[in-house]
Amino acid sequence: MIKKILIANRGEIAVRVIRACREMGIKSAAVYSDADKTSLHTRLADESYYIGESAASQSYLNQSKLITLAKKIKADAIHPGYGFLSENAEFIKLCEKEKLNFIGPSFKSVEMMGSKTAARGLMSKSSVPIVPGTTKAISSITEGIKSANEIGFPILLKAAAGGGGKGMRKISSEKEFGDAVEATKREALKAFGDDSIYIEKYIENPRHIEVQVIADKHGNYAHLFERECSIQRRHQKIIEESPSSFVDEDTRDRITEAAVNAAKACGYFNAGTIEFLMDKDRNFYFLEMNTRLQVEHPVTELISGIDLVQEQILIASGEKLSFKQEDLKINGHAFECRVYAEDPENNFLPSTGTLIEYKIPSGPGVRVDDGFGKGSEISIYYDPLISKLVSWAKDRTAAIERMKRALSEYQVAGVINNIQFLKSVFNDEKFRRGQIDINYLERELENLIRATLEGKNKNELEDAAAIVSVLLKEKLSGKNYRWLNPETSKVNNNRWQDLMYE
Image 1 (cartoon, one colour):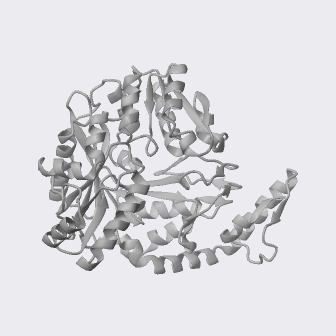
Image 2 (cartoon, one colour):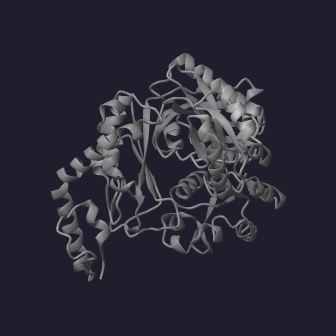
Image 3 (cartoon, rainbow, N blue to C red):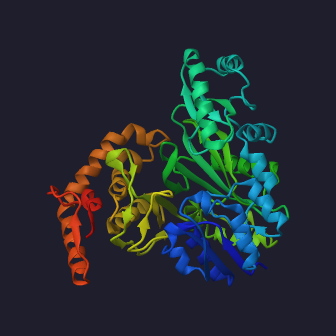
């Protein structure tokens, strides 16, 4: 059994792994950069170690530092969380070479699914539907135009090593093709160090449906149902739910079977996610596999009753799955909101600063996964995710109302945030009726921003009272504030960033 785990990550996912370790009686070792010296994960872990400068390349992405530290402190295993090195095949190889247990899949599975073209080719041979397109990178513009005409415009150009919406372009006609190929290849090379691109048929207004899969090293596979991840901005998810209100029982049976087949095709073990696009007729197509724990795993945990992080650790220890497929059933409905330090009114520009007020919601059916507290710093160096707010209830309608209540209780001051924007989405009738797809936010953005502004104006007096309360408390403690902008006359959430210590 694993006795000590080095957590090669930060923020809320590091905290999540630390809590799983504590419940299992396993020692946790956190790492931190200059920017994270006072972060929550450094205080909660049994041990904490400085790993380097704030830039991720000097700290959380420094493979040799992490391996050296793990061996020095006699850690048995490394948990990568998500992002950073979680899908880095070379890092997994290095862990294996140094006899450190990597809590995740084998490097072979990661390599097989890391190339989008190779993964598409593998899926097409494994009874998993793929979006019509090429299964190899295009070698020339002439070849690409020929393939695009055979597939039919509009098409998508996509980076073979890509993800997160980077290296992706919609092409509506042959005349756009040449310039678009060059631009996409440049973007792919910059983002992933690989300029290989391929072609997919563009599916009009699809839904993004993904299936949580999990497998042990003994050949046992299971799925934990599907998640709806269609509420996206620039191909980045901001709201997820499980189960999907659009997926009926027949579709669920077919898509989960396809997901398990996909995992089997690459000899997968540990937790992973198979992502699909689904059209208006419930036809679904393989998009990609995420060979790691997903950001949105809490909604699956709440409707299945399975602790995915503990299951990951057990699998890495050589244990069999602690459950069988027939043991699982969907219990209720869950939503997750990603609470970001960003300004929805200013093209979602990231915000930085100190959390001078931070109070999280609670109560029945509410979960908050975060890595911050009052006084924490939201820096420029990492993703501006503050927390993941999760609601659970007996059905979708009740889960929506619970999320609205939780969002209303959430208090964040010191950085601009998207809480009011999230409220606007949950109040929107189309969202409430489940009339969504991956272009929902783009279509409804103007109305949602308008609703966000109206909500802020409505709460203006409450915001002013909150600011005055904070100022009085800090004044009594000997601290003084001044306004960066002396002409500020309107006190609301938009002005928190103008407030700082004198």
